[in-house]
Image (tube, rainbow, N blue to C red; front, side, top):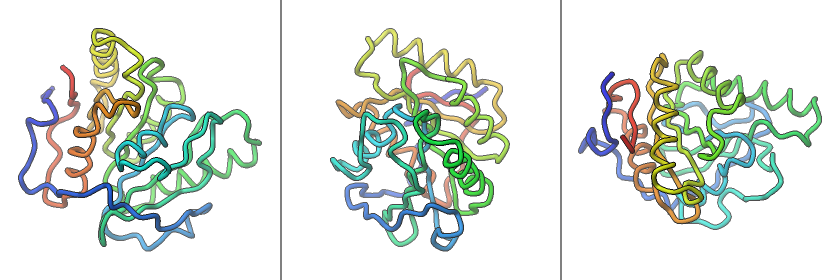
Length: 225
């Protein structure tokens, strides 16, 4: 297995995107209502209350780009944001929320399945986990789904500000070892929406995915070996 730090495979041909200029496009309850399948998309996914909305806000330096809430399941649609004329960032519904009725859960699952399976312009998935509780059953299911659809995955272990440095490193290593036999390309990094640690590395990964000429380097990488 070829393990590299994120900055070791930086390619000068990668896109250089200003994430602060992001603009909302649309919010779709159904896959059929999404814009035309073209350009380059990267989707953010995560278990409810893992801090996905906060991570998006930190990435774009916005307070309310993705509205945050202590109530799980606030994101109930596929939300699309434009970075430029060909690059889109997608905020997917959080999964695992318990206070939503079964019918709505089933609908969201179906629409999410359609999106991850059929969307040709999707370049990769950013999976947000709580570093204190990584690889939950729901996270594992999402990873397996990414594998089944052959989608590259970048895992950000959010809320790292709540742990000491040694614990952060050991958790990253644990996740990396657990996923070492994955059939897809996976990268892993610690992240903190609270203090901004990891934002630079996340942008670098997104720039790679948004660059059509850049090839993925290896199976599993970590920003903290």
